[in-house]
Every structure is written in C-alpha cells, then in structure tokens.
Image 1 (tube, rainbow, N blue to C red):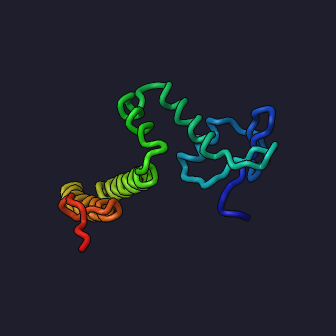
Image 2: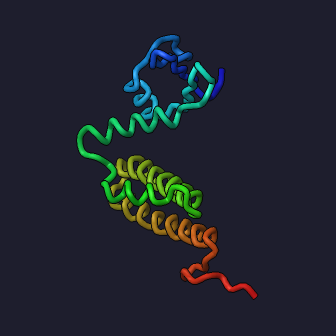
Length: 154
C-alpha cells in the first residue's frame, strides 16, 4: 500500500477515497488534512493532480466561515509575488516559516504538560535560535550578508 492516499474526483464532482472505497465530501478531505494524512486528489477525466485546487477550495470555505486567517492586505501582498522574480524565494520562505511555527507549536504542547515555566524558557530560546538560523539562510539565498547588505564581489 502506498504512503499517499489516492482520492479520485469524478466528472460529477464527487470525490472517491480509494483507501476506504467510498465517496467522501470536501469536509472529509479537510478531516484528513487535520489528521496529517498524506493524500493526492486525481481528476479521473485526465489523470491530472488537482490536490492544490481541493486544498484551496477548503481554504476558501474556511476563510468564508468564521474569522478569516488572512486579511485582505495580506492576500494582496501574496498576490503581488506571483510572476515576480522572488516568487520561488517567497514560497520557500512561507513554507519554512510555517514549518518552524508547526514545530514550535508541537514543542509547546509536549513540554507544557511537564514543567510550564521551564518549557516556555526553553522554547523561547530555541525559537530565537531557529529564527536566527532561518534568517541567515534566507539572506544568504537572497544574496545578502547577515547584516542585510549585498555580498561583496571582488
């Protein structure tokens, strides 16, 4: 059995989970995301991977209901990166930032149950280290020195 769960999308717009052999809803796909299940959604008409489209649909539904995660200004800023020279760099920056945030969140949940004060101190120290390392890597990738100035070329 594959590590990635396959969900097929049929022309009638229905989603079929091949692992459990039944039709599912977008809400069921959201539940898979929340559980951390790896999956791929395939359009049965042309075998195209449409996972991103389904995930964007879930995000749109989440943004429309309740309190949105993204402000209009934030979305406008993200849109401005499309097609620009920094699009790839920005995408990697966002992905790495989310990964760091998720790791920190996991650490908080694990350690707060033990000794809350010590846990917060340790997490804060580690956060500073992780962000510092990430910033140095980001600046290096952008061709800048750690102080934000362009690298000197002799």
